[in-house]
Length: 260
Ligand code: ADE
Image (cartoon, rainbow, N blue to C red; front, side):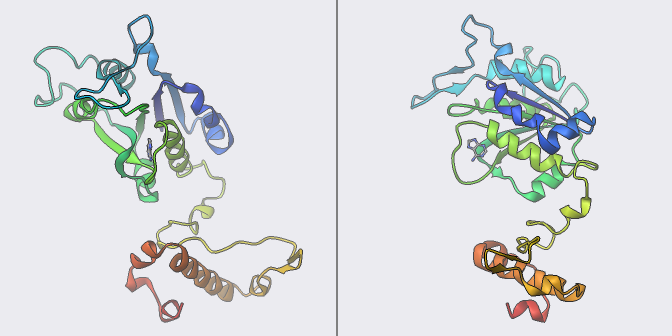
């Protein structure tokens, strides 16, 4: 998979050299390129923003700078010639790249989104700062046949899209074949197909500072352990995430589950 990240703070993306994502890059499983948006700014001060049309606080990122940057990075050529616009047919094959724009006003990013994105051959992130990117940028690339998805991590506001891009890259990269050493560890984790949070986990020693690990986990009885884990997963989900519990498919719950 190839991922491009466009930002005015390339240093923010430095953690992508570390850990599993860093190893995936070294192993050639992930081709990740970070670009400084100011490279496409044309004035002496490398300006990327301007005041909002209609007035108001803050600054808005300029469509002309984003347009030049995205045309080059997405490999789409110049989209700005007269007569071209979102109402015209794209003059190229759809590029197979999906443009992701992190923003608190986007659709919610979930494990399902990560699973879908893991199947897309090329992703590009446009990381906004200030009050965001001029809305015509997303509209323009949609008009040129690019799938554009505005994504929100959750109902809070970050200073820009960089941290969100880090989160999305990590969530997607760990789903790529070969990135997580033991793929079985992806099966039972939180937000998997069952729609449950993960059960609590323990390791040695069996007693630590007077706290005992659950006895069943030392029993070697696989069916009982599986039942115990499912019960704890359900219990946690009901207590901590009533929204997820309410969305569980009743057909997948057995009688024992219903007693939790
Ligand atoms: N940029 C600023 N806040 C954000 C959020 N909550 N999710 C994604 N991108 C953002």
